[in-house]
Amino acid sequence: MNGLPMRATAFESALAPQDVIQFYQTTWRGRAGQLSDEKRVADWTVVSYTESTFHTTVQVRARQEGRGSLGYIGTTSRDGTERPDFSARGLPQPAGSRVLSAVESDDPGRHNVQVTMMTPMSVSSSASYYASSLTRDGWTPETRPKPAKTAGADPIYATYNRGPEQLDVVFSRDPASGQTYINASRVVPR
Image (cartoon, rainbow, N blue to C red; front, side):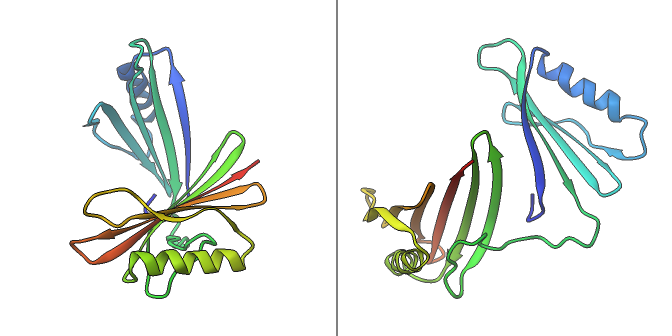
């Protein structure tokens, strides 16, 4: 979250969303930390709690089937010594580019790294840079960089493999800023 490591877990419950929120509010109320007010974000109910260097957020909503709830619990720790990590997580990063977000997740059977960055390079130059950098690093193109069929835009997408790893990359131009966005998702089976 905001460049800091986060531990996030998905959950499902037979309880209604309001009962889940009430459980956490009751648990956290009266403790030394600070409990946030309950907030609504679209169809999610969100509450958070900060104590010492730990910040925990719970977001929950009703299940589509109408009974029970599903949600996420995320915890970060900031002790003052950690620095936000906005690195490209081992993915090619063109000179002059800036990482906007980097998210890592561990799901059953796989580890995923998703990085979004912005560069002043053109879409085609960015795709060429990735192709040559990845080939040098042992990646094989599964699909050569191809323009997407989108009117009025020039996005390019490509898929690369290295052993069991797969990397999907989309390069798209933001007409307002003149910058190219690179969205890369690397999946490693476990």
